[in-house]
Length: 312
Length: 312
Image 1 (tube, rainbow over the protein chains, first blue to last red):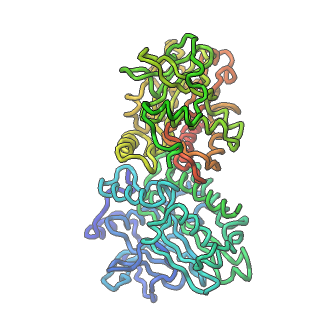
Image 2: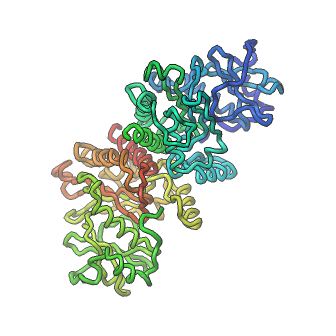
């Protein structure tokens, strides 16, 4: 069962929003601050070829335009449900971007006003964050989807590492300390990644020589992946929740992990401020009392890869 | 990569076996004991419509005829590999039937001599065992299979609870204490099970009134599922191994759980002798350093169902 009912076209969106009352901020707050393209997005729907992209206000807010075919409405509904769900432990909330309702804003390409989901900009305050988006689960389709969507997902799952590894890269941006610039790898490239590429990318993510052809030095592995508050510790805490939670099934959802390069050399692990956030909730379903085994299995596999890097 | 190379037709099997030398018992030991159909098999390939079925000798051995299309050879190869794999912890071996090589035997239907895998008969010594076969994983296909096999598996996974629950029933046999007879449910019936049916069957498995239409009493839940050596404890021990093991991927493999009814009323949990075994290894792949996320996810979901029964 789809979490929030049938998809809605944009034409009837306004009527629906008024009736349901869940978009309390829509049309009531119009942002007058200067919005701009986010510098640090690594995957997801970016402004390109006429498609709307997200915006940031430079003061800590991230504005994600509603995705088409009802996905934006579904994602907003998820955030509404999640924000008010008393069964979600507080320590787990920290792994989700804070939600601030929705707003109708001038689109990133100036083509008119569109509803946006308003979130905390998770990399606000980071100077040179390296970020990596990893889609979790060996299956991105789920019962009840159209045959067209099912076939599209299945094809992507088989072409990428989703089936073999239980996760796939969706894009990343890594700061190369030797060359003082970012190495940016987009969806089209990572879509062709095989198992060894996926493994290598996770090593390069914590290396100072990511742009070089040589063996990644994993210089920051212990600061970023390791430690009591590093990526691995966070992933394990998330996993512990997924072992028991039956509230939601996070189909096609990503782990977004990022850290600060600016201060990592000086301050080490604490300076890295490495964080994990779950992002992209356009296909979340009601868990109906069943563990999200697809996400849990993929997350376990991903964790094993991170552990291997720390152990090697 | 298929664990043990290309499938072999039976025509060239003998030559292959001689060369590879792994079927050390073939043709050298011919069983002269009286073999018979197993009383307690609940799923898998039974003797039916001319198909060969397994045999037991009544003295603790189970003879499984090689399945067609090379699957028998693959399964024997798995047992050979697993038996000699020093990376498998001893406490994990106990969850697999003990392997005693292979033997060429007169088939169950008297149609000639065929190779069989020789295993411990896991229910030997049980008088009235209730048994349940649950196929683990939301996906029974795997990379590298033929499109025909892929489509057949995908269809079955979608039609059953595999996709939604991460496991599906494959058949069971439950002793009804009120009526002193078995309730046997075969593959054709459980194939149509929905989520609620799957949940109900797990409750009936540990009830004394499984044949009745009334609510299952779960009279033996704590003796069979609970306790320090019950089904749940065993499943958790298995799961702990699956969290880290990257030796094998157990595609289309089942958890077979069983217990003794004869003495459960008198002796309680100890009398139940509840056990979990993994069975059916015709589609096991080399793990290649990757966690078996498909099995692990499904097993985690299955464990949640067992826990729910114990908690309710």
